[in-house]
Length: 579
Image 1 (cartoon, rainbow, N blue to C red):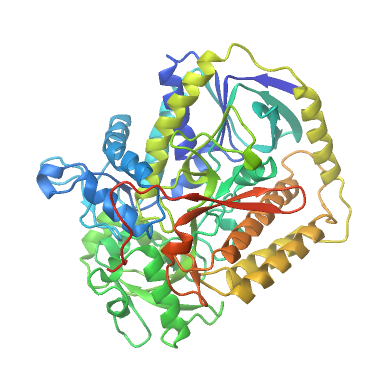
Image 2: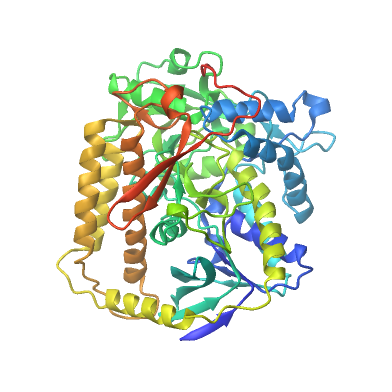
C-alpha cells in the first residue's frame, strides 16, 4: 500500500475545505504540507451549485444594517435553536470574508458607485446577500481553486474516496482512501484532519443536491464514535424544479418572484403576511405542502408530483437576464419554459443538513461517551457549530463555510505546527485491515441489488421523513431503514474491476447514506415538538420548556446514545416566531 505523508489532511474540496486549506497554509507561512482529498474533481464539488449569494453586513452607514440585526434575523430564523455566541461570530466576521473573496477576484454584482450589490433573502430584515448573478458558489469556488493552484504546499487528490478515519488513543493518525483511477487503497498519514465533506441530502430522492452529497464524512465520524448534533433538522428548499429537483434559487423570490396556487392566488399571505415569499424556508415549505394537501396544488402528469407555480412574468426580462441567467437557462433547457413568459413548477426538496458533526466554536470535534479526541475538526455543512439551529436562512451557508473555513484553518495550523512528527503506532496495520474490508466488499456476490436498496431508502425518506412527519411514519421509516441495512450486508457488485469502478463508489456512498438516514429518522422520532424544519403532526407547537436543547447522538455498541446540550443564549430570548 502506498503511504503519503502530510501535515494536514482535508476531506472534501468545497468552499469550506478549500477555504480551510488556504488559511491553514497562510497561517503557517506556507510551511505545512496540506492534502485535500476529494472523491470528485475538486471543481465538481457541490459548492459550485450555490446560486443566490452570501450574507454579510457590508454598508451599515448606507442601509442601516447592523451585526445585531443580522444576528437577530438568524436566531429568529433558527427557531431559537442556534447557539447565539456562534451566531455573533458569524455575523461579525462575514463582511471581511466577502472582502476576502473580492480580493481573490469574485465578480460581485455592483451598484452604481461601486458598492457590492445586495439582494433580499428570506427571513432577512433588509437586503444583505452579496451575489454574483445566480452563480455565486461557482465564482467563489473558481477563485479558491485558482488560489490553491498557485500554492505549492497544497496538494489536491482528485477522485479519491475516503473510507476510514484512523486514530490511536483518540488521536488522529491518518485516513485510507481509494484512488478511483486505479482502484488501489492509499494511506494518508497526517497530524490533523478536517472533515469538510458537505451535507447528506442524497438520503432523499427529491433533492436539490448533487449525487455526491452523501454525507460521507459525517457517516465516517458517526461510525468512529464521534457525536452528531441535531440531525433531525433537514432543510427542505421551497422551490425545486419539478420533476428534476434542480434548485430554483431563493434569489428568484428575492428579485420579486411570486408563488401562486392552482386558484391563481398568492397564498403566502395566509402564512407570513408581512414577509410573503421572503419568509424563512421552513415556513414557505410547510405552506406549499399545506396548499397541496388541501387540494390547491397542480399535478405534473408524468411524475405525478404535486406542485405550485413560481411566477416571474411580471419582472423586467432584462432583470432576469442580468441577475438570474442560470435559472433562465435551466428552465428553458429542462422544461422549455422561459421564466419571463411562463410560470415555473416547483415544490420543496431536501436541500441542506442543519445538523452534522458536533463541534465547538473552533470546529473541534467531540466524541461520544465522554471519550477524548485530538486532531479532528469539522467545518461547513458537515460540521454543526450550530449557527443555523432548526432552520437556516438562505445565504448564511456560504458565510458559515467562509467564516469557519478561516477559523478552523488557522486553528489546525497552530496545532500542526506544534506537533513534531507523524505517528507510526499501528497506522499501517489499521490501513491494511481497511484495505481488506474494501476488497471483500468488491468481491460481494450476495442476493441484493444495491441500487434497489437505494431506491427503497430514498423513497422511504421522501414519503415518511419529509416536510411533515408523524410518529407512526417515523417508526415505519426507522424499521424500513433497519431492514435495508440488513439487506446491504448481502449485496452483490456486478463490476469486479478496479479502474474507475463506479459500482463500488455507489456502494460506498450507499453505506454512508444508510447510516445518515438512520440517524436523521431516529433523532426526528425522539424530538416530540415542531421547531423549524422539524414538523411533527402530533406535536404542532414549539416546546421550549422541554426541547430548547440540542440533540447529541453517538453510536453505541448495540444502540445509539442520545443526550442533550443546552442552547447558548446570550441576548435574544426565545419569543413567538411571526413573519
